[in-house]
Length: 90
Image 1: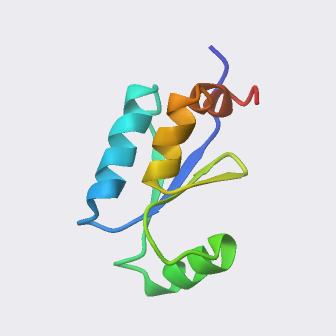
Image 2 (image 1 turned 90 degrees about the vertical axis):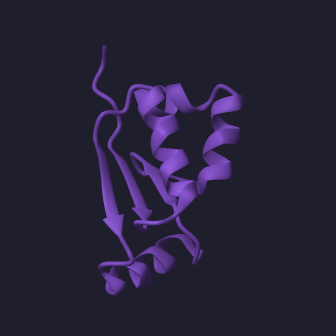
């Protein structure tokens, strides 16, 4: 299989949506998530807001694509768009 796109997720320790998003990504074969903890690094939250114009976590990036939060990730998966994006074929 071709190498997967890198996955980056802005998250916090206690966010249930972050955990759900991580579980879904793992189900789709993602073994490494570059997790940026905005609860531990407040400067990263500013960075996240600048990049995404959103305050909520998770904010998920696959390669250069900003997917959004958990709901968007689930919707993308339901449409069949997540795996091609992870594979870099979309």
